[in-house]
Image (spheres, rainbow, N blue to C red):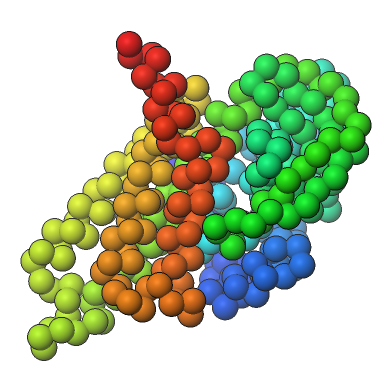
Length: 313
């Protein structure tokens, strides 16, 4: 990681630590818009989170996908609800248009407008709060200039989803592979959440005492947690490769690796915490729900495996 990206990560981490405690996350996810609007403003004003992938001539920071990945991963650690994922994808969609909408790009980069990209109209991230909506079908991009949106029940309460129906549309241009970019961003978020989930589990095993000693001191549990650490770091390496060299293959690999790692860590976290983990008051159940909700978002792992299979056989 470059010095600039490490500084970016540290800045986001500091904001999360100060403004996105577990209690604040719960308040945000139950709010009318599903995220903390004051924190979103701070992320946009102090970090430029919404402007990272937008060129400077459109009011952005002129960064790259790797910069957005740093922020997404850090927010994923705390399950922080923000409209960053959908907004970043909407910006990339507008930038790929034959004639970019400069006004919309500037508003998205400022954080004063919220974006969403439709891959499945029944489950759209940011769909019910979006100002700018673009549909991507793998071949073409279509701007939904007028649309209806309604929230849908989701397994993961920290990520709001909506069913979006177009009323008026306009063609934008060719799809540059937004689904692959979305897969890489989501995989990075999963890695951040998996790492934090493992950290919470390790900390708990150091505190929980059975038979007169912390359960984390038992060799069998040490082995299990070592295996989880290897799983997370191995998946992180796959995601990092996808960020460095994005392609349909690397994106599919990243999604499969990140989904498997996060789901495994979350399941083990539930087991190692015991009964307390499934109570509403404990955060582990939120990580478990995020793990399984994210694994099905933007296409479940089996779909990505089929894509990879077609390249092997």
